[in-house]
Structures are given as structure tokens and as C-alpha cells.
Length: 336
Ligand SMILES: [Ca+2]
Ligand SMILES: [Ca+2]
Image (cartoon, rainbow, N blue to C red):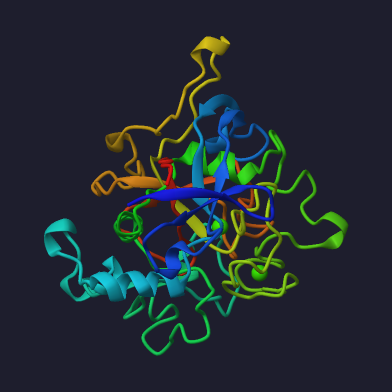
């Protein structure tokens, strides 16, 4: 497989394929991120984002948008891939689970009809039989008309399988965060320090009192087309909001401390240890967790202010939901 670099009209380099006619590598679908040293994390918000620490990463290329339903469908048609949510769970992997609960499905958000305790996420998430990327809101729903929306209900293995098929990879947390910052080192948001500059919504998030009142002031109740909101400084869409995005890092509850000297700044860090990523609240369940980045259309001021580059969330690798997707990167640069 070979790539060649071209200049786009935005002045950034992008990669196009030489030999592949697939829409997944349409011209300008990847943008070059220059690499460098940046301040990762935040000391201003949730504990898991701290401390701010310097990290150096190399150059890479990243998808301009999250992978869409159209792109994922091409992959499934080309490979016959069956997604994790479409397979009934293997009882061996879930000791103690009730047999009638071991069906193929995925987690779908549904606003509760009455006031709920915000600590109890089961009040708005339902494990729906038959929910999958093809049926994002349950078996009777379809992706008709949602070609340009991000694919959802993908477990980590599905994202990785897509990336391999496309000749790409998935980003590390540091790569993802560097790209999301769009060159604005230390800024609160991917576009600056103001959430809605001039009253303009810069990402698909949640306005109103989550989880019952969705005011849709940004124009979207659920997912949105992947270029509906402005791109960041690197020309990347939807890094923040719309859907959370998988990274390859195993989750750790805190970042490393900042290096005492410039010589010791970590280069291309790859996260914590798999064995340390298990959920400490569920000692009997050993399902490792990856870092998700960017927040989603369900992130609300009263519940989850994670619509920022520094924000992170632990997601078990076997979990798929209606607000998690992914995008790919490549670290390879080959002359044509
Ligand atoms: Ca919204
Ligand atoms: Ca996103």
C-alpha cells in the first residue's frame, strides 16, 4: 500500500491512496498533524485529567472526521465483519451473568420520563436487544439517512478491525489530544477558551438539564453529520462532541507527573498497564478499559463537562453504545 502527500486548499497536507478506489480514502480525508511538545491534561476540571504534564509526540496523519456509517458499511461489505454488538456474549466471559441476559445488543440512551438520581446511569442507558451500528436506536431503527453521521455501537475490537482494513491505526490518547487542541496549547476548548464564542455552538453537546431536558440549541438531539460544526485549527471536525472516540491507551485514573527537566518529557506515551485499567468498583469483573476522548452529544453542563480536549473517560473494551465512535490515524509516510 502506498501513500502520497498532497496539499489541500486549507494548506495542510493530506494523504490520498494511490491504488485504492474506496471512498474511505477519498482525497483530503486525512490531515497531517505536525507533532511536537504540548501540555496534556488539565488541572481545572476532573481529577482524572490531572496533572498537566508535557508530552512530545511525532508527526502523524488523522482522519478529518469520525468514521461515518457510510465508511463503516463499506468495510462490513468488503470484509463480512460482524460487530461485537451483533454477537451474543460468550457465557465464559461473563461468569455469574443470568443466561437470559446474554443476548446480542448494545447500550442505547433514552431520556427518562421522571426525575432521576444522576449517579445511576442505568436510568438513561438501556441494553437493547438488537441494537447495533445498523440499528442505532434498537431493532426497529435504521441508519437510513444517517450516512454522514458517525458510526456508533462499535466496541474497541470493531474500531481496530476497521483501522487495520483501511491500512491505518487508532490514535493514542496523547496523539488524539494533541490533534484536538488544534495548535492552541493549553486552551480550554478545541477552539479557544470560550465555550460558545459569540453565542455560536462549536460542537454537538447537550444543552439543558441532562438527562431529561434536551433543548437542542445546537440543532441536534442525537448524533449529527460529521461536518456540521466548525473544524478546529488543524482542520479536524467533531473532535469534541457528537461521539466519544476510542484511543489505544489503557485507562489509568491519573496522568503521570510533569517531567522535572526537558530531557525527561515522555515521547509518544502509550498509556498505562492493561492490568491497572480494570474498574476498581467491580473487583470481580476483569474487563480492561481503554481511554475515550472528546465527549459526546450527551455531555451537559450539569452532568459531564467533558467537551474538552483534556477530558477522558474509561470504557470497557467490550462495551458499545449509541454515543461512542472512532477515527483513525497513520504514522506512516511513504513517498509515491
Ligand atoms: Ca446537541
Ligand atoms: Ca468526537
